[in-house]
Length: 196
Image 1 (tube, helix red, strand yellow):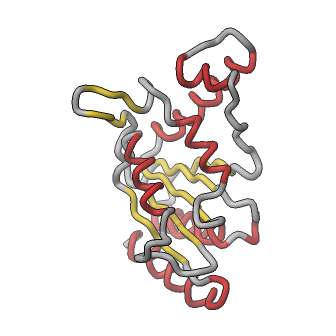
Image 2: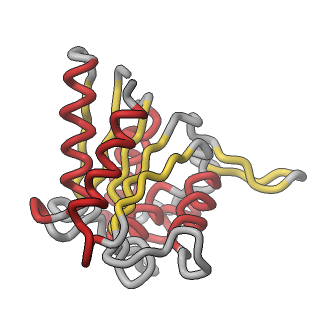
């Protein structure tokens, strides 16, 4: 591994299980590849603003009439550059009310841009980001994988694939409300397998 981009989305800071698993992944990665470069973005510390009628025109149609529109485009370009420069992407995705945190959905609004990260042709949509491996740490109090109630995983896979990131591996830590130690231990073991 050379360049790893880490995106944290939890609102729980150091108490976040997804952040704890990310910390493990980073520590083990650095131990194995000392030269690895880690770039991190924490959406709780530096949230992406919600789109509105002014900024959506900037990101969807390139309108730059106002300072807010120009700022939205500049932020979007920065977020997209972090993805383009990564050889690997690590996501922390706690399950809030059966889906991803609102911080992550807002982030997607800024990185899913027509003619920049995706385009349409006669064959449908085509993602334009480099298809690098994505490791998504999904944490939840209950257990949902393999059930009809796991609406998070398909949405994340579809959304990332839409912009070109179709190589997504999910690492789950579920049942944290009643078997946290076992869930974290299993996810830790999966990290070890990935980094062999």
